[in-house]
Image 1 (cartoon, helix red, strand yellow):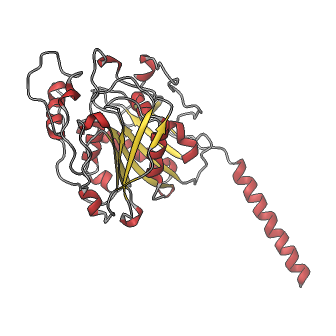
Image 2: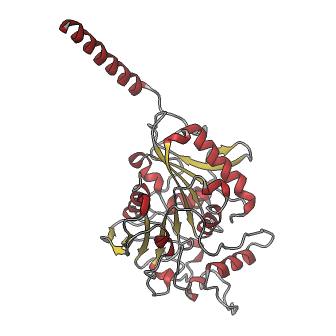
Image 3: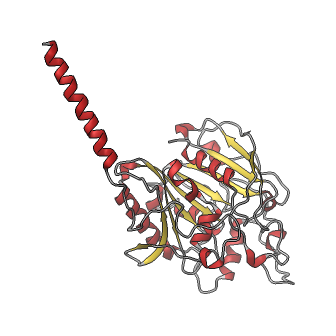
Length: 355
């Protein structure tokens, strides 16, 4: 009897070894018909990223609209592996590959098992006409990775891409799927200091005397005027329905010298504790990108060249269901300097916290 048991144990152990070996030999997945590479294609050097690279549309093609986008994922991704999916939207007047390097999550795709889709708006500003394209990209990733293997789905948006994320989380398609929203200078769910006039010094023509926008709604009106013929949805007001994690990251100079208020109605909804300041993030390396078209003279609030820096992390702890609510302020920075490595990685860690 004992010999029979030993034989059975040996057979079982051999089966486990064989199954493990078979899994190890399983070829990596390919998503969206895009060959994976590390470093990813169209990746900027550490400094001096050229214009043709930043305006690239990407090699993935959304088949229903025939529109291009970037799709970055771990090159050793296996079928059935759990991942975090990020849909990252550029700001008004920008491009997908600029956004890809403004928030360079692509540098951490292997380490944190990220699938990152970065689309492009043909009009260089997002409208409701782009919703089908964005939904199709999401459907494609869900189908190829498998819905049960997507442990979290984050919307990330810079500037008007953040304002668009705010609108998308209120639509039926996204509210059923979104785990969290990372707003990169794209509006806060709660009070925010008024936009300082210096924000527009580099953007508006010299001698402009019209009243400066000071709220997201007024900024949306100004964007609509800047893109005639493009129908922009008004900036949402109030809080969206549902419950999801929310992180707001901004440059210190975008706040006009005022601190972000302690109050967060979103943190209150999620039952979070009082805001606490975590350890500052110290970056000795600069980000990849900036806005080279508005540097003569430019402004502190709009942003100058990328450079090292310090970021404050302000978190509302103990939110229900493990959700995350936080504010991140990059000291001495404005709207357009690309995020530095440590602050990028910390934002990703916050996004993964519930996972």
